Length: 619
Image (cartoon, rainbow, N blue to C red):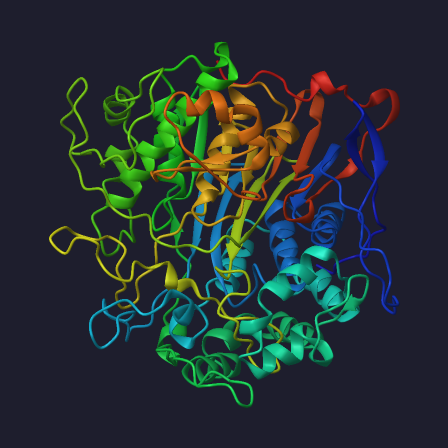
């Protein structure tokens, strides 16, 4: 169907306890340097559907689709394509991701595995040098060796075919215009460019695209990407076949096998990707993970993502604890202990299920969770790292950990997440990535997008060669991920959805936000904005300064140790409220602030008060 243009719609935000109007506006063509970036809003409430992303232009593209009659799948694909324009260092058609979808008509949750795959020529020793030692991580990242077969384009086509009502051409319309017209550079985009400038200067097409005139883009200038606009037009006209079997596939393979170094730059490692890898790629449908928590059904992404299994196991471990009746410190202590235990099991057992026997049912069983939960003491933190449990189906009342103590691995802190809910109750929770901020740093010449470095998510070398390592490279294998797009239902009806970027901290960001919303009775915006900490079975908890200031002393007294990090994650979410309202929420400050919007905002006397934004969830 033709995609009508729609006017910009006001958003609503919580400010000083009341809802007020405001909203994002896309950069107009011809905006002069010095233009103000579009305004970001962290909370919106209204009707007609909701979109939450990290970027106001992408949120607006998604809202336009909903306003024009598209559903949540259509809007999610459109917003993701727009993020490929405005968040090119985090997402794009050179990467992959995981798409979790609730279909209101059937009441079913389905997932799409758009994870990148290793080339068929890649073996377990791909990231080892001639002496058998792991090559330096930074060297592996900025190379052709790190590039896996992109899964994002196949994910979009699958989502539209399975759940959507729009064609790919229609869904790409807003993002194509955005790439042509440009967006206003903000401080976050400039900072991300600056942080990657050294490695961007390794590759001639990356310099040309992201360092215009050889310099960093200026805040307030308009950044246009006509090459990406033309690539989107190619996909709109011919579908994704050019990227997997046609001219674009040939260009991607050539770029990976012979990275386009800038003049005077030493040769970087070539990659192993071949045409056959692209031609064989599929984005399969997978059954979601599911756990029941406080009477709610929590759905997530199954392996090769560890997000659904680790969030789910953590919630199962927390289920016996009456968190809603406890003060903040005991709640947060239990949260940190549960996530450490679940990460121990994640590191030991989760990988690509096509290559490993992942004991998923046992990891998510109530019996295994009870065995793990009995290790959590109310007044003492477990020594870290804790050993993995034994999800073998035979459980004792309270055994000590018996499994291996496996390493977490290395994942970049980038990625992006978007959440969409439409008026019919369909929900898309979609996390997509090119891995590190800036991916491999390699831009496909003349095509306007960066290639991923997803294969560095593999474990380069087994820590203990006598034990199986589920995340070693292998031909066609999908590296383990921490992406955790999540959907929560109540007796089959949609309640909320959320997700976040952040590498392995994605899991703890999603988990903590769920605990904040369900057990600590925060509204979704408060749950997202609260100070964060992340315990991933490491000796010290990674925590934001505000978390340490508020809770560090009391938790240290229980035995927790802390390492301060500037920020963790950049979550977005939506929630269906009583009375037919829908709420969208994003970050206030993290990653420069996110963007939440609804199709028809409610303002004035009809707007819910702050106390009505957090109805009790579960039982």
